[in-house]
Figure 1 (tube, rainbow, N blue to C red):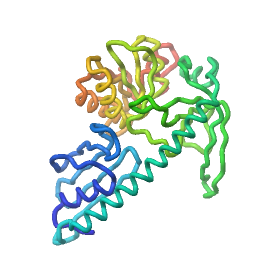
Figure 2 (figure 1 turned 45 degrees about the vertical axis):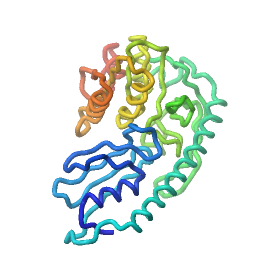
Figure 3 (figure 1 turned 180 degrees about the vertical axis):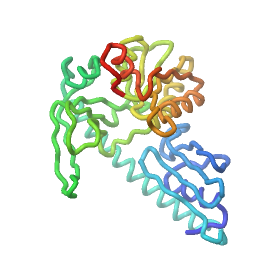
Length: 312
């Protein structure tokens, strides 16, 4: 559908992707918005109207969906009709219900896998490589259906996978991250998240309550930070999830000093690790620290200090 006003196109896109409309729509800047079915202030969506006012982009970090919206070529179509608004709302509710059902199924699977898993040993290959302790992580067999280069689907079982739990704001286990003992040829990384489990707003932590808390991205980074500081450390798993986790921590610990331990992604455009940490810190009244070497997280930096070389 085409629109006469770019704001109508933006509102339609927000509704289509299950995102809350901001009070004001701006141009030439990314605006953080909430997902409809999440906690208020979850910040799991983004929208940007291009400077020329002819289009824009939108993304729901919770579902991983993203898309574009535009005016028609002449910018002369009618505004969003009531019938179209109702259609979009019905579609939004349908997608929301499907997503919640998918995440609930994933949560049940996560609980079953976690319950059957064993405590991680000190000599797990990943822990040895990262020079960290298990910190209540577990190990188990990770099963995943993947599609290979020929388009053939196959079920892969990876034994001795390190398992990291992901909890929501009420303390319920909702998903898992697996870290493989070795690189697997069918995966681009040595890590995987439980399909359908979601990520936005989910987190884990190491340590008991402290007046200052740290928030970082990955498990190895969290382990290193806690082992060196004994400060309670939360992991958000991705840079895009730092804000949502920071908001939850601020709500639960209103008087805590929050420090975001950023990844220094100097070899990635825009340095997302540091950029997202700064955005999150500004939103919750926190501060940011960053490793003093390029393309590194704090685990990389500690290994560097230990004489292991720069592994970023």
